[in-house]
Image (cartoon, rainbow, N blue to C red; front, side):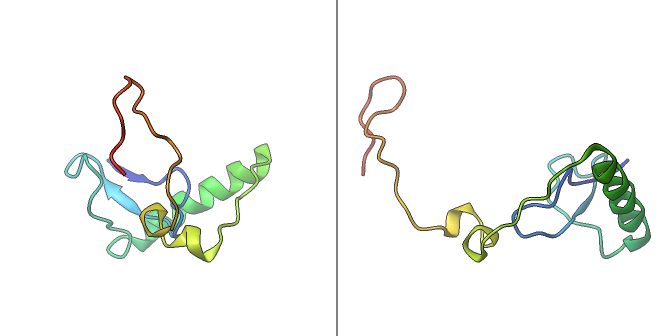
Length: 86
């Protein structure tokens, strides 16, 4: 069974996975099966237009991924009350 992302990740690229052989979705096979990816993206685009999905636009920082974004949490305690080491 092949599956594409429900929507592209923050990098804006659709990916394709074989979830029978790769349940953790670690190997993008979209380059090996561009025809399948194109069919899935086309079906998504038609559905998204039909139901009025608004596609988010990401900044360049967001496209780099969450871990690459600067910033710190202002949270000082974990939910169970222990301090967070800064």
